[in-house]
Image (cartoon, rainbow, N blue to C red; front, side, top):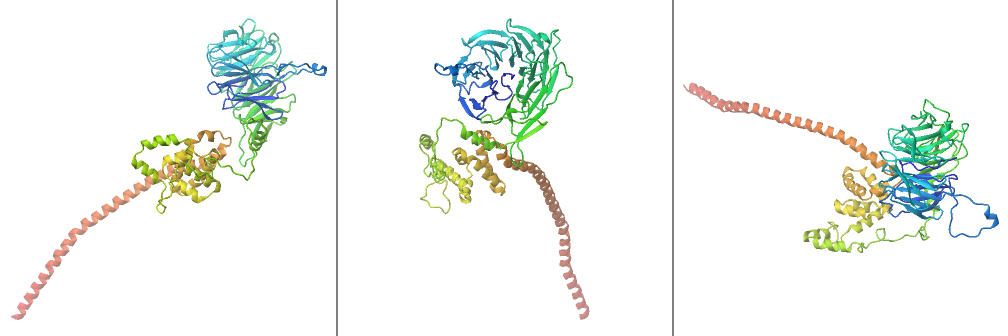
Length: 603
């Protein structure tokens, strides 16, 4: 028997429908509820709450399967009278503002809204298996029991000193587990505490009953998981009350994100557990609960998934559901916006690594999804000419006319002349119009699509930050990634070109960060750019050290040469002076000697 549970609060809400596991309900980053059909693997329904941005969904829980009424009643035939199937219908959505939304998957519309019970955000919701009641826990330390027939609060009581982070109702509907950091078991008739357990050091995020046996037989077990805790603890409810500590624990590789289990109905039947961790791995456990176990139990099978790239990239698993077959299960992986479902995954081996082409699967699934937006059938060779795309030469003035008029009145004559001479080159014709921001965006898109180096050089040579910012902001979304690739290519070239490309890269990251962060393959798209920047930053530190050493060396050389020349000049000056005096005195002496000789000769 599969345990019907609420999704974990560690990740985004994502949970399979009970029993048949025909549907997968998930909330993505955009705040929309999407219900996927696991058989056809397409989008079944999509619901946008009225306050999906301000009151985000914090938890989801499927209600018990029931006979839902769809549309007006009609008289059934005798052959149809005996065939009445129960199906998953109601979904309880807890929000961050304290309200609870009840959505009907059969009708595809809002069933009712439950408000006025909590003053804080709802952390967990749990359905009663029989009576059609709903229990909720919030940041305020209260548990609220809701009656769906009247859409009002039936009972409310204080559960703990801190917030209530997890709830779970026993299969027979008589007991309720609640947890913040400590775990309490309540009697639903009297609303009194039946048992207390030690709990975890952090907030408990998941509670599940593992057996369906009565509590007075020492055979009632339940498990708990907490945030930042890589152990799942199993607790036994004993008659003597000595059940404050856990009896069994399961080891994980990371924080548990989604838990599914098949309960045990007798001692001879093992409990099967599937845990999806935060790191994207799936761990399967199978154990007979017959008392305490000293050592933590390791998983019987671990499932991982990766893509078909040359360098394997792990694909995160979102949720898993156990089936009647012990060697197969249902998986959901990929992105919350477009999850991929896969049935009959073989888990016979100890470690299973699945390789899937997620991009191809996503494109096929997107083509098959039900959408209300109708797109016209266009030939592949035809091109659509719209503002901002190649072929549009006239600047877009409709939306920016009022702004330009306001700016024109505030601009000085010098600024107007600068705008007029914006794109005039030295050899250009004076009568040609100047290139405005719209022309730059159109030229950039044309250059990226045709890969024309001349057009790209003319666009990238500008150094005005305002013009670069406006050009990037008016760039169409499909041209953002080609622009990033071109910037990465040019940054690997000449340093002068890299200096210009840094300004464009800064503008792209400031204008289109939200779009880039929504890409599923962002790591592979920006990996080359990231590694190049990282290597250059590391090299910059070494070059700075080398520059300092060379500067110090050149300074010492200059000082040494200046000192050398000064000493040489100082030593050379007196020698020259003595030589000059000597050279000046020698001719006189010679003349005197010659004159004396001549005098002597004369006599």
